[in-house]
Amino acid sequence: MSPLPPILEVGGVLISSEIITERFCCDYEKCRGICCVEGDAGAPVTLDEIGQMEDALDAVWPMLSASAQSVIDQQGVAYADRDGDMVTSIVRGRDCVFTCYDGDNCLCALERAFREGKSRFCKPVSCALYPIREKDFGNGVVGLNYHRWAVCRDAIEKGKALDLPVYKFLREPLIRRFGQAWYDELCEVAQLF
Image 1 (tube, helix red, strand yellow):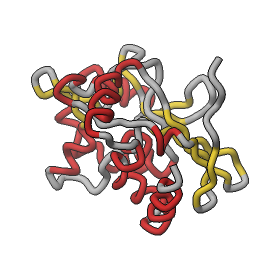
Image 2: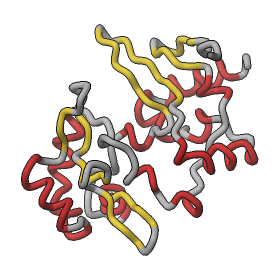
Image 3: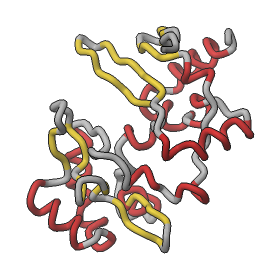
């Protein structure tokens, strides 16, 4: 078994050094958004995000499948997973209810409505931050880990080809979540690697 990566502290947030050392860049032409339809649970969400998703329902409803609409009618936009964490509701045990399709491509209806100016909510920060997963340890302690998933192997290859570290690929979502000053500090720490 390989040793665990070192944990760093940046602006009060614990981060795995893999966020700096690993390379990643989504390759939508190859994966076609499979992360929206693979897995056994929805995307992690906060209570605030659940409210924002509910507020965006009118804008996204026409983009959703009848199955997704039925799930939302029955259980809402989110549910507690087996660990007790709130996640987006899923269809047939795998597809996020907010998945919509454009040919063979899976898209996020929330993000699509946002880009079209129909909603003020883009998508859950956990989706925007992927492959980083955030863990709340309580008492204000937050950790960030690099998550590996077989469906993202093309993203790893593209990231290596571009020599693009995870934290640089996710610059905008990290700033959205933690702020510009925090991201600047992360960049300073990254220079030590």
